[in-house]
Image (spheres, rainbow, N blue to C red):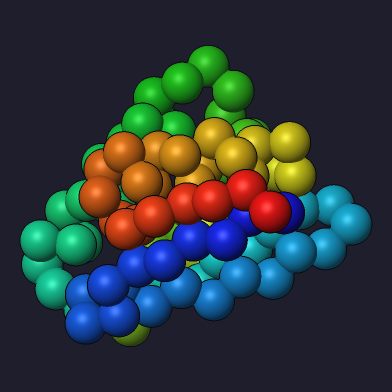
Length: 91
């Protein structure tokens, strides 16, 4: 299991993990954070596995991200790499 922190003034993340995948509902609260989330999106859309992490933009400007269970670690590491997260720890 993972525990992560983020700046609540810039982003809000809600996570739901099922038996098949994890879903993250991401509300971006600043334009600089929106650019960072888009960097994460570009990273995963640019790799050879198109179904590992799927990003969906919503009309309200939020994102829904569906992540295969075996890719959660990679997704969180890249969110940290692009400074969407402040910290990650493994429990």
